[in-house]
Image (tube, rainbow, N blue to C red; front, top):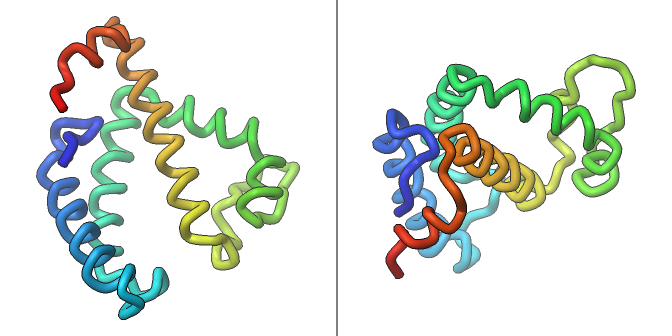
Length: 134
């Protein structure tokens, strides 16, 4: 498993990753479960909470909020969210969102945060590539 963006969240992320991969391969892909009854949801919430604190400490949460605000119209089209033009939160009304598209959106935000962290730390992508072993 890969390490978390925030080292302090590695243990929580590892528990979630292990649970999710087992659930996905042993239940979801075999049709024995649906995305609505994902038994790893509580672990994901714990990881999300830990990561949220770490992103806030690094000031990345504001950048993510700005990116979300800039893409409200795209989210309305591709994620099925109701477009809210005011500054109200768009977190309401997610019940109709396709879970896989929501997961893709979260993944994109995490990748964005990862590269932003690299920039803040002064690390280049080439340095990261050279340290990855396959």
